[in-house]
Length: 566
Image 1 (tube, rainbow, N blue to C red):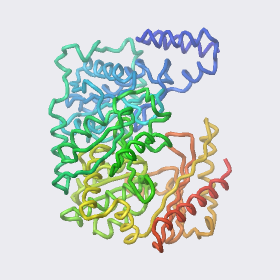
Image 2 (cartoon, rainbow, N blue to C red; image 1 turned 30 degrees about the vertical axis):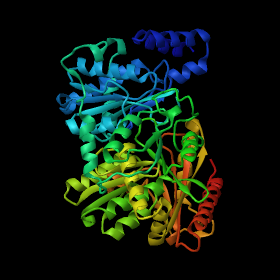
Image 3 (tube, helix red, strand yellow; image 1 turned 120 degrees about the vertical axis):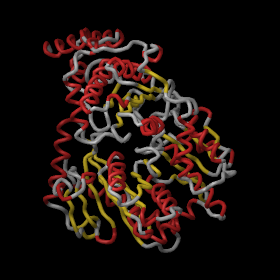
């Protein structure tokens, strides 16, 4: 206990925020060793997605002291890389602590002699990333916890190409953070948004105009529509920007869910602000039913992900990330003037259908590690080598990018292009489900399921690693009666693969022409994940066939998960 208390008092001595000083002091006085240990023994560390965690006092929480030290580390890294003079773009979401964290970020960067362009109000993450590309900035920072629970916040960094950083940048930034002094000893311009510093400015007022110009250049549809689209930002940042681009595109009947329209980082109407979670889109579906809408769209709170629900038969039919991904991929390639030079990319845990689509159009398909940074890295690298044009990328967790408008997933442009797709189908008297059925007929009926095994703590992490080891060393001969025809251990042979498909704790079991199973520990949650992708040729009613095959995939995943001993 004495060591923990001493560490906590040292942290308090360097914390410039009276609120978190009082909070951590109260924990010491309470004698709650478990709480104190959770704040002091496990520190937030910088990774390729930046840092993210619960807001509170101590190095194991998100707070001003952590943000200030992280920003000093980033500033030192940018100076060392010779990119500091290019400046940094800073934005933030609607969580209660985000504005203060962003202002501290701006203040530290400017005090380190780095020019900063900041958004003065809550802003979609994709627009911040776009602005960094548009301005040629050396980096961008977005203070956001995306769709994490309300108690969390985060600090996301974009690097030299205005894309998420990839190794070894994360390790180098963490090393710089480790050498940073206590937060109250770090130079910082106070009240940076209002300081009048020559190094601090607002982003250009016409940035949405520029963003729209690039989006419109990727549209194959040159008119609008009379579609009624119900939209929820789930209390996030997406409404203003999406409304703007949809109106410019001629899709003028975008109806926001009133109770969820305003940015509110406390997320009062949902337990978990993620459109994939049960209940998150209930209000949108109620409104859509009431007004007989043609389409329901949702962004997550920082607007980098997109969910879609469409009317079908007797009710609303949610589309999976893989289904939206396939529909958008086919739409982009079908309307590309030269698909043979097109490059599309998807993460390894996403449906294999995009590869089939690319083959049919003569395009190049690239498979990457999980994480959108790798999708963009692959597309831009191949494009830079003169091997084609990066036109599309997606991951099954509701992430999509059309071209390199934003070098990350972008729920705003994806929502617009998907609405174009729906309008094109409607012009021909067809529905989204008709379009999906067409894909199944041409490329096989692909279904995907995911099963998770939760194991908390360091022991859980070790057990999950051991489970992957065991599966690679002694794989089953079949999964649910489907023969395992090949085993790929992605922990091995990374030097024989491109950098965007490097080493990771992942084992793939190929099930002949019927599909595959992937097993890996989550990179962000205490879960071992089992992904099942199955394919069959469509027979009979495609929706009934889909239901049957999806049920079988779920059973296979559950069966394999049950056989894994953790």
